[in-house]
Length: 228
Image 1: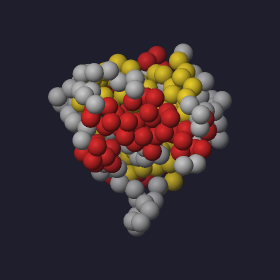
Image 2: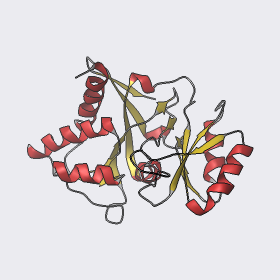
Image 3: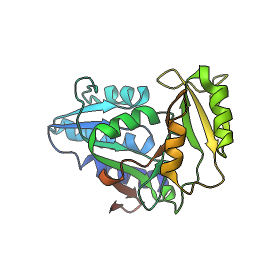
Image 4: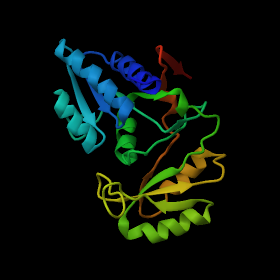
C-alpha cells in the first residue's frame, strides 16, 4: 500500500470510528469514503447499529456489498453525521467537490446532517480554492449555461466519459460541466451565482456548511483532526 493510500485508509477508518450507535449516517462518494465504509462494515459486524443514506449509485452498490443497511431522505430527513470527501479544502473549510459527479446529492445529504465530516489527504488542503468547479446541468440548458459561465469569467467544458462515448451522465440524468476560473476570490459569491443559473442543479463549491464541518486529514502515520 503506497503512502497516499495509507493516508486515505487512516482518514476513513478514523471517521468510521466517530459514528455512534443508532446513528443515521450520510455516506459520501469516493475512494477515502470507501475506506470509511470498509471500517464501518467491520463495526456493524461487531454489533454497531446504523442506517446509511448513500449519495450515489456507486456508494449504494458498495453499501450492499458491505451489508450496510440503507434508507433514504424520504424516511430519514435528519442525518446524525455525514462523511464525505473533497477535491479541495481551504482554511475556512470551504470546499470544491464533484470529481465523482455526485455533488448535488452530496449537498442534499450535507444539508440534512447535524455534523459534516470531510475525509481527505494533505494534498487536498489549499490556501485558495482553485480547482475546476463541477457544475451539474440539465442537458437541455447546457448551451445557455456554458455561455453564462463564460460571461462571469469561467472556462466551461463538458466532462467526457471514460470507456463511454459522449458526456458523463450523473445519477440524476444530467450533464457535468467542469468550469475553470482564473481566481476564486469570493467562493460564496461564485457559488450563489452558479447555482442561480436556470438549468443548473448544483455546483461543486460548498461554502454553507462550515459551521458544522470538521476535517479528518489522513497521513501515512495517522490522522490530523481539524475543527474551526
